[in-house]
Length: 76
Image 1 (cartoon, rainbow, N blue to C red):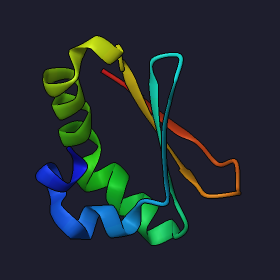
Image 2 (image 1 turned 90 degrees about the horizontal axis):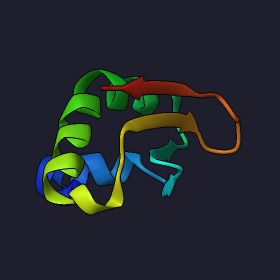
Image 3 (image 1 turned 180 degrees about the vertical axis):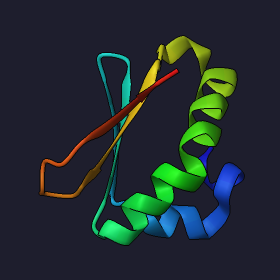
């Protein structure tokens, strides 16, 4: 689904994806990529997940630097 929304450019930025308690957790290894994900992709990804995969119950996205524990949560 991410490749459909953003293509290879989006997937190249992402290192880990998981779902935990209704939160889609997306990690990247680069601070610039993290900023780009938040700024350009956050709402598109959340909307696409809710539309295309409603049964998994994602209500928010959390972006973080891989291995850093930094977090930003978006709930819509």
